[in-house]
Length: 277
Image (tube, helix red, strand yellow):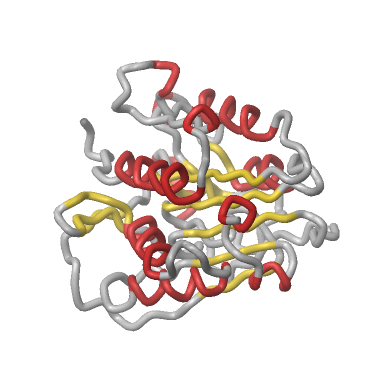
């Protein structure tokens, strides 16, 4: 273990695994699970293995397929030196080996996530992403976003942030960036033909909670999300699912779950509707 260790991430993805198989008919052989508890180096969520997982997910996808990706773990930020991010910061996810070398070499930036899930998504293929990590609000840089405002929490003080401080020199550089309102990068493209939905645990300036809920360590977003699915009878539109997730977190956590997609109409589509038929 380390000071950065989180208790709920493995439970998150195993809970989603069960939901996908038992409620939406995914075949177990069609699911790749990367966790640290499998005693198999090929299944550790290192940067290389996560990137291999991106390729595995996208390769051979064909029209009519419905893809699902979840990341639960640390999120962080990097100074944006390209000038493309209006707030001066890149969001990133932090693989298990992210402290084994310099950043950004050892993390996965939001630019790469956009490239994988938007640019490589074939026409006619649907994809749902869930990022239960810090600073994840616009991590896929999609144009249509929905966020929610919460009151101060009244419960669940036993929680740990999923934010990972960047190495010292980068942390110093980040602290010198004047905070500005975050917006998605203007990529000058028409996204409407891409069928992509991204749920995020919080907004870009927030942290996501790793908490003990019902005696089980887990991510607040994943808990609220799967509970919402159950409450909706495993069939809900994306907006209904976001609102139900919000209701489950309200008053317990300060983080504001978000939902982004490529077309306003897609908020009214049903979650995993092909699998739910």
